[in-house]
Amino acid sequence: MNNSTHEANVANIEQQRQDAINETIAEHGPNWMEQYAPGTFGCHELLDRTILAAEMVEQSVLEHPACAQNREWYALAERAVAALNDLYQAVGTEHLGEEQSADSESPVV
Image (cartoon, rainbow, N blue to C red):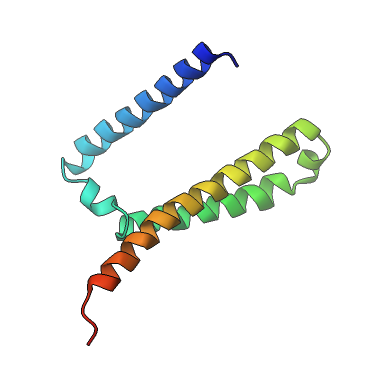
């Protein structure tokens, strides 16, 4: 992939993200981020769904005999599992870091 193709892909992904934000604002209102910020139930829900998706892809796709018989398919499935696990770690670090920060600010009784 050449540099201009990569830049166009990055711009397209960002446009998709912005479109998703605009749809969420239309559906939930301008303060929607409060429900989904790290440390909230909404963020925890994403964390849970991410690990469920990673496990499902690993068990249902990566470990499927048809996938194992094809080197390219297997490599793509492994990348999908790895990407979902990376997302889980990234979300978890920020989400649980926010919870731990809030806990450390609470007075000990």
